[in-house]
Amino acid sequence: MPGASGVKELKEVNHNPSPCKRIREEFGVKEKKEMLIYLNGKLVQEEDAKISVFDHGLLYGDGIFEGIRIYNGKIFKLDEHIERLYNSAKAIMLEVPLNFYDMKNATIQTVRANELQDGYIRLIVTRGVGDLGLNPLKCKVPTLIIIANKVALYPESLYEKGLDVITASTRRNLSESVNPAIKSLNYLNNILAKIEANNSGFPEALLLNQEGFVSECTGENIFAVKNRMVMTPPVSAGVLDGITRNAIKELCSRLKLEFREINLTRYDIFNADEAFLSGTAAEIVPVVSLDRRIIGSGKPGEITKSIGREFRLLTHTDGVPVYE
Ligand code: PMP
Image (cartoon, rainbow, N blue to C red; front, side, top):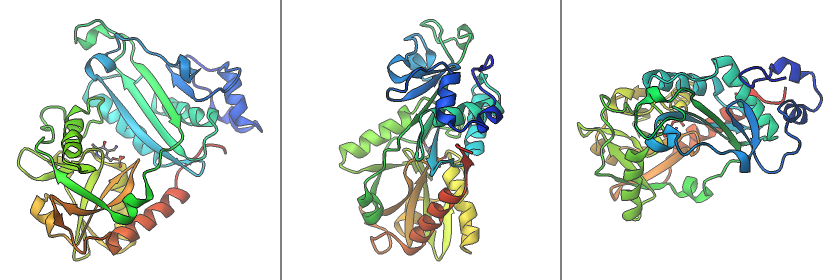
C-alpha cells in the first residue's frame, strides 16, 4: 500500500512484469480513462483532479513548479529539476510535503501510471488552502500536483527558420523582489512581455533587467555566439538557472566551444554571429532577428545546429529510466 505520502517503494514495482497496471492498482485506480493525475498522495482521473478555489496557488500565485521532459522512457535531468523545486520552495519558505526521494518516486510513478514514453511532466506545489487573506500562515497543508502528459511539440518551422524576437518594455523582476531564480507560480511579468510580443506580431519577447542588460525570454534562456564563443547572461542578471542552459554548458566543453556567463546588451545580440534560446519545452531554438536587426546570416547558425544535435543525443541517452 502507498505510505502516508501516497508513495510506493519503487523496488517493489520493479519486480512486477506489468508496472503500469500494478502502480494503478496500488493507488486503487480501477481503470485509466484519460490522464491520471497525482494529487496530494492519490492518483486520480483527470476529471476528478480538482482543488479548492481557496488554494493560494490560485488566489495569489503562491507556489512553485517545474517542467520536465520524458524522452524515450527516461526522465531527463530529474534530480536537477527536483533540486531546483526544493531551492524555489526554500526561497519562498514553503515546505514541500514529500522528501526528495519520495518526490522522485511519485514523479516516476505518475509517468508509469500514464504509460508515457515521451512527454512532459509538471510538478506543482502550492501554499495550499487558506482564507481570502494573503497570510501564508493560514495555509496549513501545501497542495502537491503532478501532471504527466503527452508532449505538445513546437512546429518544425520554428527550428528550421528560427525566431524573430522583440524586446519587451516590461523589465525582468528585480532579484530583491520575486527573484527570477525562483520558478514561482507567478508568471505575470513574463506573460506581460509575451502580450507585448503578441501585440506586435512577434512570437517571442526578450526581457531586459533593470540595468538594461539582457536577462531572458518569457520561458527560455538566451545565448549569443560570437567567434565560436557561446555567451549567456549570469543568473545574477535575473534569469532562471535553466537546466537546459546548464546542459548546454556541458555540451560546449564536449564541442570544444568556449562558454561564458557574461552580461550582454541588445547590441551584443544584434551583432552576434548566432543566437538561440533554450528551455525544457522548446529545447534549442535558433533566433534570427532581434528588434528587426538580422542576426548573422539571418538563418539558424552552424554552432546552434551542432548544439541542437548534441542536445538531442543527450536527451536520448541520459535520464532516469521509468520502466526498469
Ligand atoms: N527561463 C524561464 C523564465 C523559464 O520559465 C524557463 C523554463 N523552465 C527557462 C528559462 C528555461 O529553463 P529550463 O531549461 O530549466 O527549462
